[in-house]
Image 1 (tube, rainbow, N blue to C red):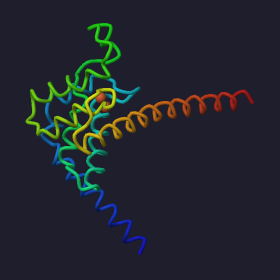
Image 2: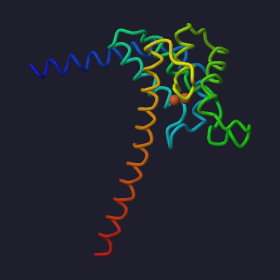
Image 3: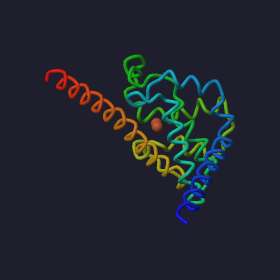
Image 4: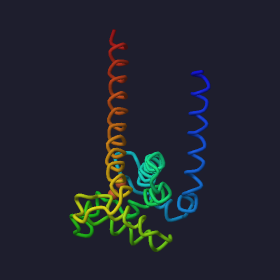
Length: 179
Ligand SMILES: [Fe+2]
Ligand SMILES: [Fe+2]
């Protein structure tokens, strides 16, 4: 019985992955998205990987809650399409408020390449709320704010836990050699 449930869960996961990919295929395969690989977002996670993480989890949550999963997935991919290194941005441009200004920049860039619904625009624009003062108009726009921060935390903690494990195993192997 447990075996059947596990197999069904696995099939559902695979079906949803396929559906997700079909929903975002035109965006993810667009050359402008590949440009995002050039920029680091959190530690060793590049901007494209971060946006895929946010987009996919947005999709799953909104699908389970019977919200607009398509808009959540598509806007999730585009939410950080600002195309610069945010660590160097203030020094180069004088804009010290990247956290507040990048949603509008991402929306402007996204509109250049893709047709967006009003909901998708709101999701991109409000993903940093409450830092950006105007509140979200929809649950999808509220959800991306939570998913974005959670993915960021995981990306950072993954980096530091890998670093800690590498350092610890190096120390342990050093101790073994000393014996
Ligand atoms: Fe962002
Ligand atoms: Fe983000």
